[in-house]
Amino acid sequence: MSKRRNPWAWIPSLYLAEGLPNVLVTAVAAVMYMQLGMTDTEIGLYTGWLGLPWVIKPFWSPFVDLCKTKRWWVLAMQVLLGSALAGVAFTLNTPWWFQGTMCCFFLMAFASATHDIAADGFYMLALDDHQQAWYVGIRNTFYRIAVIMGNGVLVPVAGLLAKGTGNSEAFAWSLVFFGLAALFIALWLYHGWMMPKPDDDERRTATVAEVTKGIVKMFKTFFTKMPVRLTIFAMLFFLFYRLPEAMLNTMTKTFLLRPNEEGGLGLSTIDYGIASGTVGMIGLTLGGILGGILAGRDGLKRWLWPMVCAISLPDIVYVWLSYEMTNNLMVVSVCLFIEQFGYGLGFTALTLYMLYYCKGEFKTSHYAICTGITYLGLMLPGMVSGFLKDAMGYRTFFIFVMVMCVVTFVVSAFIKIDPEFGKKKAA
Image (cartoon, rainbow, N blue to C red):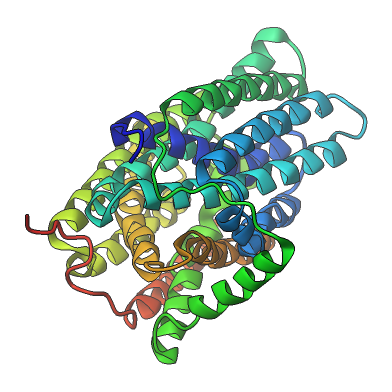
């Protein structure tokens, strides 16, 4: 590399910047809209649509591959994300707050999806295979820390601001989003100085014909990496591995916050922040780091099935909570610790298998296709999750989600992985 940097200097902050807009659009927006009076059916549908840019991002990923550098795209999207966050803050207190915030959230989603493409491509260019496996736990951990930060810090901060200032939830949330806009400008300045400049990250200026040809070749090579049968199994794995999470993603937040008479646990925003943001973050951090260490030591294939169990079976804590209906902070925190630890460990398998599948030419665009397929697997179930929950009630809904864990096991049974992938190469 022409400019070397310790990966610890930029991987944590880069994946915090990658994860935070995602959680704002797909999770924090749900809590905000709930506090502004929307039903679970409406929340599931509208926030589900906000996931569309992550689904269709493969169609513009060749522009990121063929124009400018990955580093340039990362920095440009961080500026755009700061602008979109400021837009949410400005529109929240207007008569057309719903239309305005949805437009800004869509812009944020588009910029975030493009940032994902560039950041993931940059990660693969700046690190070798072993480093990718070793740091995958770190990148996943900080991505999920961003998720926990959204739920565990921003939500209670908005609640405290609403009470402390005596103003509406809309005013409190606008202050939160102004702060987030300032944070992204700071991240843009930091990464402009700290991110390395890999020799392989070449500056390109492609013509329309070259981009079109690149798109055709990119999609063709993506679906011909493996024999047809194995390619189908890989696509099903990307699509359905996180099916239980797709169903739970929004509904667990409303379950924890809605009052008992609406079927929820009725946690305060402070208790929600402690259980999800502090205890959950610890569980996630330990699970994510452990997953990267295990895969880096023994390879992904050795730990696939323990990771499959880890990402699915701990979801049963929500079934237990829906029967117990306790709002005891310690009990709820232990349950979230178990679930988040399992998720941190189990998500390692999906990330590494995507890296494994995308080896070779067009790795950035191919990784974008993989993540687009996984987001489709999150978006579609998420859009109907609110309707199903309203029809079933939380208790039956969580039991239904546990039944859906069978799908995760089935799609994991047919993928093929090189036993040596992820292991440290002998000197």
